[in-house]
Image (cartoon, rainbow, N blue to C red):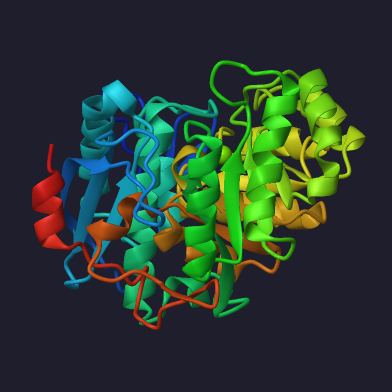
Length: 405
Ligand SMILES: [Mg+2]
């Protein structure tokens, strides 16, 4: 029998019922690409994860709200056959952190043999493998973040570029603000002293909190923020976080009474997913409203931004699902003429905020700094982006051993 070579279509009907046609697996609905068609792969060969308990203290002003408190995080190392290794980190697992680590391990196992620089393909594969979780959040998204960060680290190291340059490289230093030192649990006096220490250390931006413990009358809330402003003077940028603890009408009431304090922003003034409530506060106050650290994935940000809920979009690297999704949200914000800021992890976020034209400032929350041998340098109140390749971070093995759960 004569067979025309050009007409040969290799079809297999495995027991699963899927059909393979020239590298495309067709499941009846949607074609899925499965085969690499050339080029030089950098295959992922192994991974290693660990849970660490990192102190949630205050190395900036040494004024911890609650001494001895720790926070669990998951770290990841992803290795390739080219000898290039990437590191990732994730958190927000709380008491489910061992489950988060298991999810990181299970997803990392699925990346073995994949070409490390084909990040969107890997993300799609992991989503499919986990039952196509299209929902905005949860353990899958947090675990994906660790994998995605490690993949971008590998990609930038392989390109022999610092990550901030590979992602766009809009600027080589980025504004930053001290965070975690002026918390609501401190007395007014402690908060004033801590604020002075931050100014002495050269910070020109810092964040405090309202929604004080015990739900005091508004006059007491207002007193706190005025006292901090008095301590630092008029030229320091002062932000204030409410951590979702007010009702929209409270936010409008207290927010309007502190407008003369000149806050750089008021953050998470009410429930993070009350987009119309946030929009009401945003429209009512002259002070810019920031929010987004509790928003998961790309699509919920679309709803928040379309509702004009915030003036400043804050993105959390873990909850958004990693660097790939972070940059998509930043680009979406740019299209709406909105700046973006980061939530914790300054040592990685500095790359992302610096890369974007609409990047505004980096939260300098120093929880993880001591995990690394070297982190971006502070100079005149700004972070200087590193020249090293990838995210330019190396675990301090002694610190990793000390914090291991
Ligand atoms: Mg916050």
